[in-house]
View 1: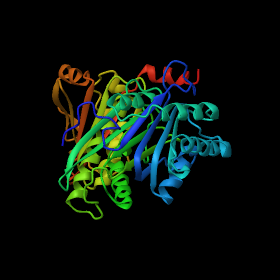
View 2: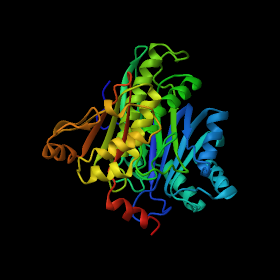
View 3: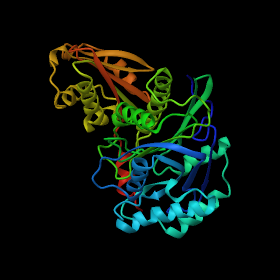
View 4: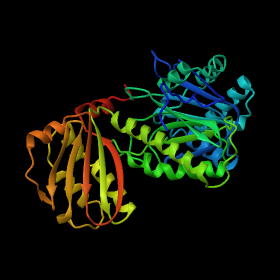
Length: 408
């Protein structure tokens, strides 16, 4: 199961998209995207656990939890439509109404998503004009997918998109997607906007279960800055256009889909962590030999979330004491004198801690390893058989600069 070359959110059959410069907040770039399925699609979603939820999150959650079917997704960047009260929710309805008028898609089958500054309301007239413009330029072409992925960015430095194909019931099935998010990243669901599309035929119930379970091992395992957003949304639409026998039970076909979903979600998790605001390096933390899987996840997230560890990666400093410290305050029982720590990257690997103490490693080699754009820290506990992986990034001066003047 390989990634498609130049795969996009529009790679699956029966999906079209468009983007436009609506002037929501940005003056010099496209800032709205529209995704449309030619047929009504089963929809699954996961949303922020933050008690403060943006209007689009409330809107989409209602659709996912009640009808479970959708045909369009409208996304704007620059203004989050969060903490905007009834007026913000009504704006979601106006956006859906604009889609119905332009494309004859039923009002209740349009999902919306926003990202950007909290506390501001996107201009309704610009949203509606943007919908009309995009409705006239819908395309299933590769370039339309690329442009949509760029249009939903805020402080991202690069678009994030991918697609994979696989066989189900003798039919070729494709799963594609796009996502954004490099700041306010510390999930309990997923901290970002993510839109996944597939032409798979699958029951809505199994679609939701597959997404909910995989999010726990992918998007819930990334951290950039310890902040969980008000707008976190991950939507998965399945329109059945691959014409495979519908998946209605957890058989081999279901497991094949789960494998594909995990592959693309892991790809996006790494992309978002590696593109963290101001980041110069992707930090991957593998915890091995934990007593339970939950222990392994807790420990991996503790290390990847540590500001001192993140600063250490930025400085290419092999200061392994910070890693042991982050493991120690995670709230998990383990014997510190069984721990091994290893640094790995394309430059090689080195054991820096054995049995909880300095392993007598080469400082020069460790610095070289930590100077690569992707760095892995392996934490071996020798307590059990469970493992988990988390992703984050280094902490740089630029993170502060970006967030100090985000509204200017």
